[in-house]
Length: 131
Image 1 (cartoon, rainbow, N blue to C red):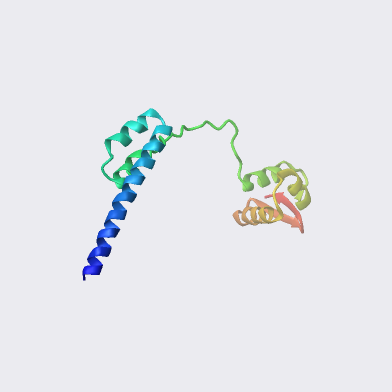
Image 2 (image 1 turned 60 degrees about the horizontal axis):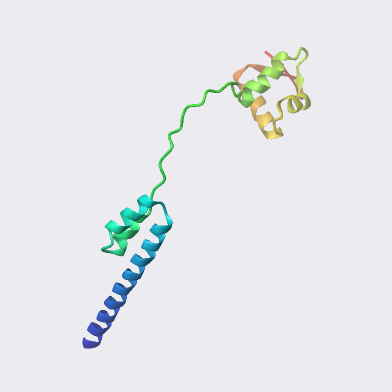
C-alpha cells in the first residue's frame, strides 16, 4: 500500500511539472500569435486545460451571400430535350453526345426518362424525335 501511495505521489508531481511546461509553451505560442490572444492566455494561467481552451481561437464564420445566377444551368434532361426539339429530322445518339457533351450513361438515362415522360419517341434505333 505504501508503494502505491509513493507511486501516486511521484505521478502527481510529474503531472504538476508537465502542466507548468504546458503553460510555458502556451505562453510562448500566444506571444507569437496576435496581441489579442496573449491577453486571453495571461488571464488563464491556472491550469493547462483552461489555457488550452482560451488560447485556441476560432475563425470567424463567414456569411454566405446569395449570388445571382446570370445564366440558368440546365439539367441533362433539359439539354437533351432542347437538342431533340431543335432538330428537324430527330437527333441521333452521336449528335446528342456531341452537342450536349454528356457521357454515354448520362445520355442513356436522360433519353430513358424523357421517353418515359412521353416527351420524345424513338423513331428508329438510335434516332429520337419530339412527340
